[in-house]
Length: 97
Image (cartoon, rainbow, N blue to C red; front, top):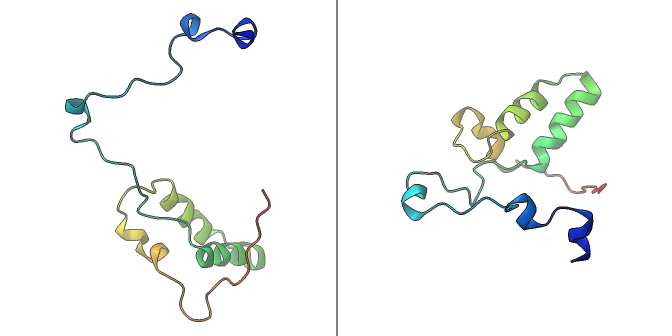
């Protein structure tokens, strides 16, 4: 209750979460459970290398475009879903978060 004194309570501001759709309203809507495209480490590494070493941002821009719609089937960006070929494996990653 102490939090209600500092900020409006749910009853004062309405529900914070949208109400679930009825089953009939959900029919025909795409399911968003799994992405069709995920950023692969070897593709990210290639985009970074091209940008840093050659000031070429084309691969980054293409990845950015593709990953803006990760749930959609995007045949033009199918190469981004491919596993690494021998020699393309990223053997060490860094997490700066």
